[in-house]
Length: 569
Image 1 (tube, one colour):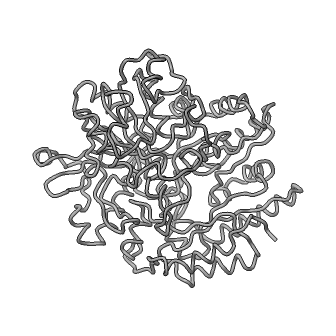
Image 2: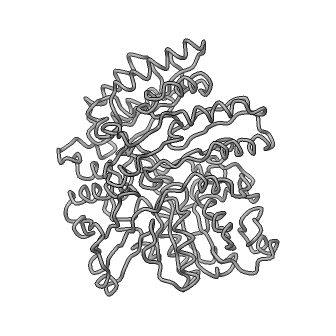
Image 3: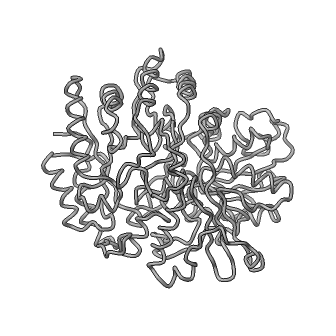
């Protein structure tokens, strides 16, 4: 097995310092190379390295020429391609379809370092640079675009990314299980079929021979092009098969070709997640960067405790990528990472976050026998599943232990918490409010109209009002001055002027300023995107949808007029 590299090499000179004549695998990413467990490309690279592969990284190559990929020569086995930690279209464009002013994953936030639809651009570039080498695609852009999908920025239906990229295999989800298996098979000349957490596109002859009997058939690409309602049907079928414990594989026809999507990969066990996060990361950007990388600066002293989310919110793409099963690290692993952070230069005693999708999901557990029969889209909505357990005591123990660390002055929960769970976790809620709020606590009711919240799968307005009362009561009892930061979304499908006025009236009544505002973006493969595209709720009821900027602007202004440095008056 190779000794871990200080950084995975990005040039021939770095390979020579490691005494490597040839790489096994080259990973291409649209983000800067930050060797830290918050960056998916680095996790996969370090994981492959730990299995004995010689891995190099090409970050933000010049996509206009294949020569930009040849800086380390030809890989022995193959190439992995990702657009980065975000979908490239979300990274580049706003909800108003205008160019963003900065790129959080680029040096000094500079834009223009990645192309739109980065995944097919990089993949086709790799095909030209490395003819005959197998190409694996993965990351969030692959996960959200694994099937025919609605692309909001182009306002049209696009096929699976496997058609546009012409890749040999797609890994969807986080990738630690399927990625090494795919490269192992490539190295041994074995067929890559049947790997959970992957998708492949079969040609005419292979499609005719493929046994589809154990697969759920999605509407074909041609049917979705012709019938808007077919996208809604597809979305329901996909959501019913996201649960690892009960999911079937899926197929989708593209003329005489067949897209085969295997069931999701098994969630990592705590000890496996610990191992991934404790790989020998440098925990900083590659030294070739002289400026700051904003995404890194925001997580430099944070700890990712969990993956996955039980919520299934209609606007969110996280479940499609990380899964609905919450995977938690061990408290011991979190404490080891906190100790590592505390020894870094310039550490000022503050852990900025311990969380993931939310700070109070850690320690979630499931009745697996119930999960094996479950086709629900959420463990929490429209009611709390009796098979999902998260009393908050594991989080409570971890936070109290972190507070005792001699070099840590404060531990904050800046990833926010789920309101619906927090109201069921009274001991944890008191601990967080008393000790882990940096003056402002982020909570995300997303809306306050009951009908819109139901479409969002976000509980009820009453939960938010109850949470406000609890927050204010505990804050007062603790003698603290701290405030809630509520996050709201404008222009979600089904939200008209009347529904948005509910939010406006609330903000007026409480004289609240907002620190963050968000206009709705229909992410590919989410239920929200299907509602936006079809103009219908999941039950087929027509709903109001604001599409062009002129229609969207009034709701945007409701929130923007309050976007000031946060201060509750």
